[in-house]
Image (cartoon, rainbow, N blue to C red):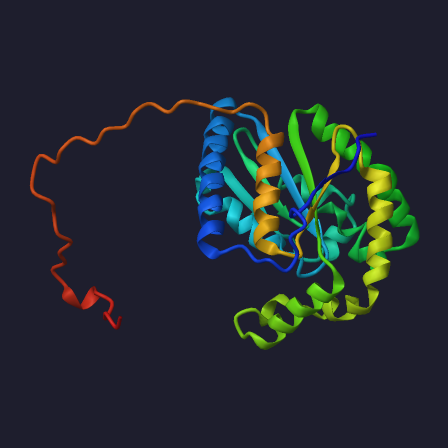
Length: 271
């Protein structure tokens, strides 16, 4: 079994990174991500990245940071809602299989099949038989993905309860973030330790050489994003492709102006 790799935020708690420094480092990582996607499309490789962690850990934020400059034709973000009545009768992994990548694609899962090892188990949304079956089947399922050539990376975003509560409070009072709190989130607030125990069992049963877990400190979300992206890039295969030089020729005519015969079609400018 592979050792659990922990990417930390360098221990400087309480010392926030200045915005310009964060944005500069994020931009440098974004350039590498674009290079990686160019390599991915060129080679036809398939990549899956799972983002797991407690509520309000920062999964959506890091996924946005990763995808900000990527070609939308070659990546997908998957964030499934709870299964419907039909999906509940299917093999548990079936609805996730539909979202696996094709040639040259990267798929970013905002939560994944590990829902069964976390929220479903802790909140009693599944039976103990279903839970135990998942823990037994999951390594087999992931071995099949790896054997088929899919590059699978699994990240757990770690956050202390005090920081989690602060983020919940922010979401509860910010009208732009209120939608992020669900009834399940509220019910799970008093189960921090239970989730921690479920996480530990999940790691023990599903941390393998071909699909290891990687834990990232997300108490500081900016540092967490940088650390996670850096770690992901370092784990990807050698991917440097030298793009052909691109030189734009001069326009043959004067630059055109957007003109419409029906001026009523224009949206009124208010800013």
